[in-house]
Image 1 (cartoon, helix red, strand yellow):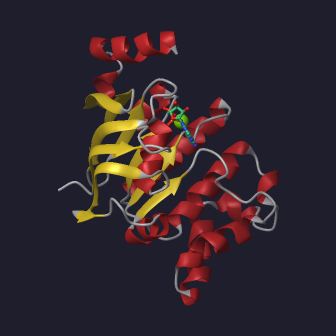
Image 2 (cartoon, rainbow, N blue to C red):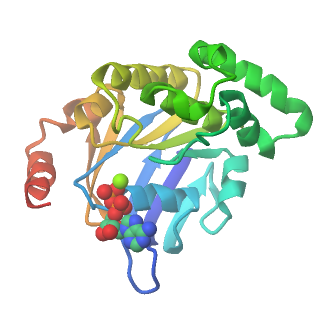
Image 3 (tube, helix red, strand yellow):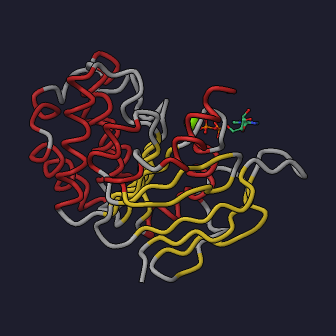
Length: 240
Ligand SMILES: Nc1ncnc2c1ncn2[C@@H]1O[C@H](COP(=O)(O)OP(=O)(O)O)[C@@H](O)[C@H]1O
Ligand SMILES: [Mg+2]
């Protein structure tokens, strides 16, 4: 059974105006699933709707077989579905450690410090910078802090919206290497990316989202060479 199953999801920001128009994906245990698509295809809206941050008007979101379609966003986090938004995913004026403490706020108080220490073991760079304002970190380190914040509740599924956006190639590689390691440690990852080549390099399967629906699905390793995808993705992008 898939850990995350999204069936025919319909979602949008205003009543009667769907942006996500019946999109379906699934992610299995320890898979990295990549979602590609042209600008404005609805990738961010889709992943936010799965996270409970954009109103859903139809379809289903199942986490481990349990229907969470209409659950509140903070409950989904507790149930094991974590989300790293593309922007505003840290508090820049708080220290690195404070950022983790806030993220651990949904945990029992007695567990928080242990989880923070665990995060510092996983991300030694963050440990070194624990007393610094998060806003003073490099783009790559800030992204790792955002991932650390999401992981602090020990989720089963980690969803990320364009974690490589705005990063230099060196940091893109660092972030993607980290995501591979996190998957090996047992997590399932759903990754929305513009940086298709880097994402497909670590991904197992991928979907191409076009106009609010998944238009293609395939193995990540072969997706790029698929002529249907080239037409869908590059053809659409040319008109974007
Ligand atoms: N907060 C919002 N309120 C209203 N419309 C939005 C909002 N965010 C995005 N949209 C619209 O949803 C559509 C899809 O955007 P988005 O989900 O950001 O696509 P992508 O991430 O694939 O570039 C766009 O037409 C965009 O204008
Ligand atoms: Mg987006």
